[in-house]
Image (cartoon, rainbow, N blue to C red):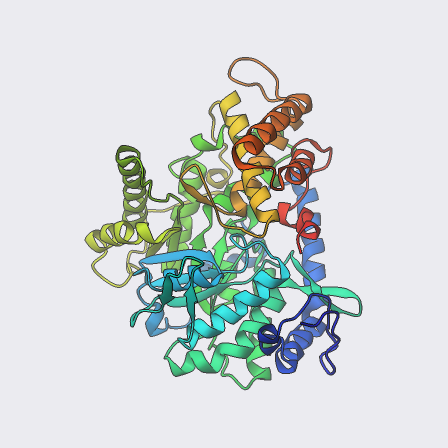
Length: 528
């Protein structure tokens, strides 16, 4: 095992330890590509991140998002994205999860059409999680992946497996273990570059391709940057342009106003859009955090039938289908409840109703977080979508305005809702600090989006002195007291773990004067 290695030629200094197996992934050729991408695009990435700050200032000053007048011609024009690859025509059920070895095998074997292997929100981005995840992806594509559990149970791939898509980290995240001139490389470029370098040829041999999910884009200019990255990487490795395909998660409020433009920027590489609904709710809270008239009720009351979320879904479906590409639905986070048949059936019925809503709305597929839900989701889509997709359903009935997308749902704020946000957020962050980013909590499979919603909502309530249903005002002191009580209770049930460390980080994010943009940014230096 080596550490602090400077690899000649690439100009990248690795500050994390590197095992012999990892050195195959961190080869000079792969790092040369990452370094070339960084040199070519880092300045633009920083400019776009700075633009996010300016747009936040606009919202703070009352200039709310709207459809862009300067791109009206793109929205009005008749154009479509590139034809869909054969192995992406039918995406009716997609399973998502982190890139660890066992999960990868189980997800590929699950019966889902697609496995989205996640280097982002369901992956705690430790150095070894990220690099070992690349090993797992390489081995899965070459069908050499296997795993033996500590109990001796063996896992290997079935003959038929899901199509693989990769979600790299968002533009805002760095890889602090890979430095150029002392500065960290973009996590997006690191994840993308390593995967593309090692796997484009092997994917071609199995009649697939390098397919990606792109998270947390806030503008069509950020999509343009990805498109330029794709073209640069394809040219660098002699791969035909258009080989890469990417589905964009619309999980920011700005992204919702630029769906057509995002598809247009990526039209030669597009695989459609996805409703990233949990992060979308987080973005809604975050962007309007300084406006008291945008305070949301308990997040359990903010369901997909609320007007602002239904409008976002309908617009996404209409936009994608107009451009002849997939409109993917959101996540069913439930996990089977083995010791309570009644509760289990109630949870599964929620999944059925959620998937029924999606397929009837016109979605071409949906997400699940657990293999046990694949069959339920597939049954619903099979019954109501007899074709590989329903892109032919153009949803001409949809007429969504900026007012629709900015409609603030009403409801109640309760002590139970406040405590639940604190409880779930602490449990998630504690697990994330231990290196696990996909966490079962109260029979739901949670990722970073849940913790982000939880702490953002509490911060918003404190900021505006929101009233609980019983008349009490939500204050910093109340949140600190409840945080301390929750930590004590969790430690009593689960052991000390990293709850004290999680508590310090999470409490500050809920009560600090300034809002922290991303939990994963603030906590990144606390993991290996």
